[in-house]
Image (cartoon, rainbow, N blue to C red; front, side, top):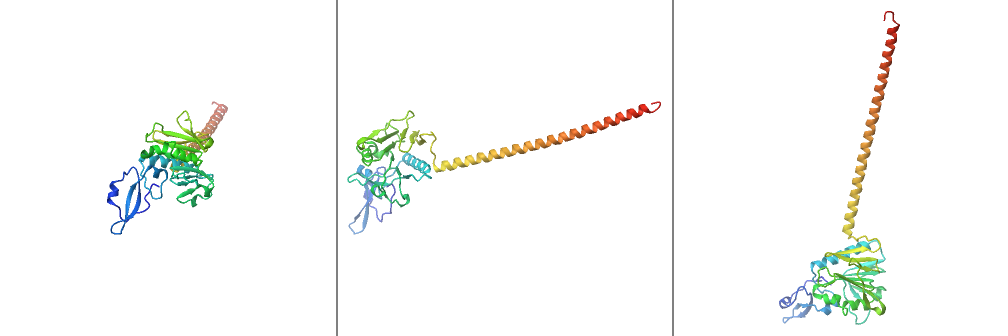
Length: 299
């Protein structure tokens, strides 16, 4: 819910000055004294953050945007050829549970989605017959408490049956750069113990999540290989193809050099053989002449 869906016909000047741009806002229409429709920018509350509406504007800091973009890109590339999981970004979740808020997580990984292209602006859990196994949020500076407070988003995702919830804080707004929760008995979250390198392991996906400075890192739990974005995969494939081409060129150059060396060696051997034959013939001729000279009287 981070983009403005329309251009307001007329915006109330007073409302513009009342809004903290970092906090976010919602456009609400009213009829002015002259009967014209006017749109007010109404500041978002924490309750709105936990249950956003279509059209809500939530500006994000650069570190939030970068971390979210990297996560989406890496996981989307990872599951590109695997229909088992679908990666969603900023998609409102309707759990089908009365009274439970419906947030729009930065990233949700959902198994068994029948037709991802048919999903609209809301993911309806009951209709789809599946739910996220992992939700990832990147801490928003103005709503840190909502992201990490056990009574807020942590409670929501646990009650919704999301197996794992991971929170990134690349901006250093909390004392923990990355933390994770895993669903336990009674649909209660338990904190996931950090790995020795400070990363969080997702059992649901077999992946490990962490930060390298302020950059998000995702690794395959079993191979230890880092996940790459689609662009990084293309760049690596191009680099590998270039390396193969250079290796083939070197091999061809070396083979050509060997062939030329062998040709020169053969030519030199032939020249030596010819010279030796000529020398042998010359020696034979000299020997024959000596014999003739010896046979000649007075020689």
